[in-house]
Amino acid sequence: MTSDNELKYWMGFDLGGTKMLAQIYDDNWEVLAKEKKRTKPGTSAKQGVDRIIDTIQDALKKADLTPKQLKGIGIGCPGPIDMEKGILLDLPNLGWEEVRLQEQVSKELGCPVAILNDVDAGTYAEYRVGAAKGTRTAIAVFAGTGIGGGCIYRGEILRGSRISAFEIGHIQVMSNGPRCGCGQRGCLESVASRLAIAAQAARTAYRGDAPNLLDNSGVDLSKIRSGALSSSIQKGDQAVEDIISEAARYIGIAVASSVNLIGPEMVVLGGGLVEAMPELFVPQVKRSANKRVMPAYRDSFEVVAAKLEDDAGVLGAALWAEHQLSPTKED
Image 1 (tube, helix red, strand yellow):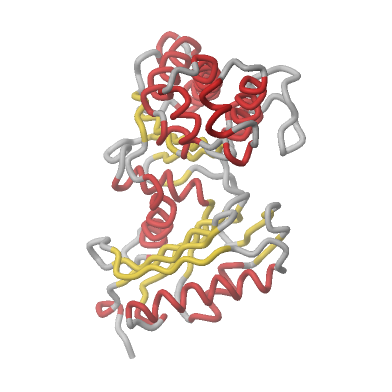
Image 2 (tube, one colour):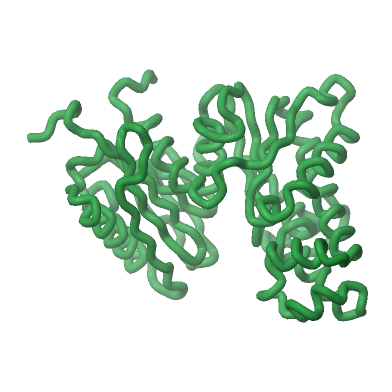
């Protein structure tokens, strides 16, 4: 029988909207093996869980390991999570509800499992080994197709009594603004996500005010991604730069509300939009937030770009598993 002292490996798993990624780490947090598969929209929750387990097992085969050699698995999932019971409460993109993911994966593989929100996982990674390392309280805003957020307070992920929290993308920043996917109006996500920005940029290009974007991407929203937006700005599309600056201003409004409530010393900005245009987002968000916080909070926080990029979620899930499942963890 394998003793705890012989267990040397942690696994992180990131369940995204279009892909799933499993990575195995040694005690130095070096990647030993990874396995990536695409998610399959329209499949049942049972089929999805089976695919998660298959992905984990394929990663283990690449590392020549068995599940019993893992100290634990951390799984980051989109949507609200019951972190105590390991239940994925709602995953609209895949149509899953009330999935007892922790119980099912642990039972099948015979090793401990911790479940958390994927943005919380990315935030936790930035806190442990990234841009927010060494802080007491940090928040993160990840701007991509949607907008997600996370908060770390004294080493723990901020959460409610049952459900994961800090959905900063659904703070209202515009009265009677565009309808958000959550059903409300004027949420940050409805005006500052990549999808919202792409829609505005497409209209601008169609009117002839963004010729470089029109030439390279047209008005197809699926082609107006973060890199295309950045390229059009570099080639002189001032109208697109104005749209990005306005989106960053709205993010700053939401950050200001969070600073007034929680008082973080670090605000980490990540996601595809920020990765493509940090020089636009970081200073504008800081200006916008400082303009709106209470006087005592002005310049009390830093705004920085995330360091870990694509692997933040999967690494954060593994780090959280270590934090939650380690035998030395204090209650």
